[in-house]
Amino acid sequence: MEATLVRLQRREQHGLRHTFSRAIAARFYADGSLERRRRVLACTQRRQARLQERARLEAWKSELLRRALDEKRELDDKRREREMDRAMRRLQHMSAEVIQSAWRRVYHGMLWRRLRDNAACLLQLAWRDFVQRRKQRRFRATRRIQRWWRRAVVVLCVRRVWHTWQRVVTTRQNARCRARAWQEARAARCLQAQWRTYWQFIRDAAAMTLQRWARRKTRRQRVKRLASIYQHLQFLERMEASARRLQYVIGRHAARTRLRAVPTAAEKPRAVAAHEICVDGTREAELGRTTIRLRAEIARLEIEIARLRNDALPEAQAMRFDERERLRRLRVLEAQRLARESEANAQRKRDVEERKRREIRLELDKHWDLTRRQQGKGKGLEPSRPDSRFELV
Image (cartoon, rainbow, N blue to C red):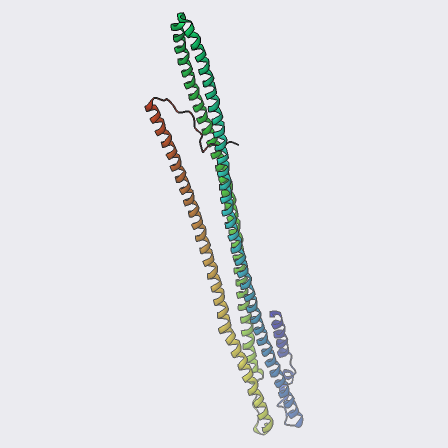
């Protein structure tokens, strides 16, 4: 559109510089013959044709401006619809991610509880087998001792020696059992500590991997969003620069057209005698009406251009300002949402840690209380019990 306006402007400048009326302007008032009147009439007709051509050109420019404004509004509406669709899809995608993450968390918790229950069952079975074997060994030992005792009853001479030997054997067996129980408890505690350390290392590594992946994903999403916003702002600035350039060219052309429309600006006045003036009243009146009509048309077109400049342009600028403000609010809301999510995750982690600490503390208190009561009763140390935090793989 700008190239067309420049080409028409150059054509008009060339016409003003090399016109036939300028070349023979000195001959218009040379004589008062019929040939002079014909030349004056032809010049007037050419001026009228030029005025009509200028009016048509102004109407065509106004139509081009109106079409450009309509196209811009249509493009803005389509762009707004695309952004709404894109925001809706982004919201759906985020909702799906939240639901999937919640489901994975619940499913992983269910798997963890199932694995813990299976491990507890395996430990209980192993412990029952161990206790049963120990009871069988004790039972067999008891029966063997009874047989020995019955044989010792027959031999009265060795009764005292046998009793002494029995006390020694029983003492050694009790000491050996206590030592074995203490060693087994110590081995179980060491194994549980190593196993907890191993699982803590695995959980820390998994948490670091998940955090690294989440930060990378958040950074990529932020870069994409800022890039789209920057491209949109650059497009708005280019449109504003094009509008300013177009307004400048149209205003300059309108000013030049108004200057060229004044009859006294196109020709140089010359003093003539009174007997040389020949006035045709009908023709002059018709030319005056035509000139008035063309000037009214030009004034109407100028009013239309001024209206477009004063109404449509501020409206477009207001729309651009609203768009920038909306994008700024979106950025602020996104930052607030990320801050709330990070704070909620941190609070959730703190709650889980506090709950685990309370559970571990309660279990340790129960174990210590039971140990103190058994020591107070004189039963010695308690053998190792199955631990719910111990897992078999």
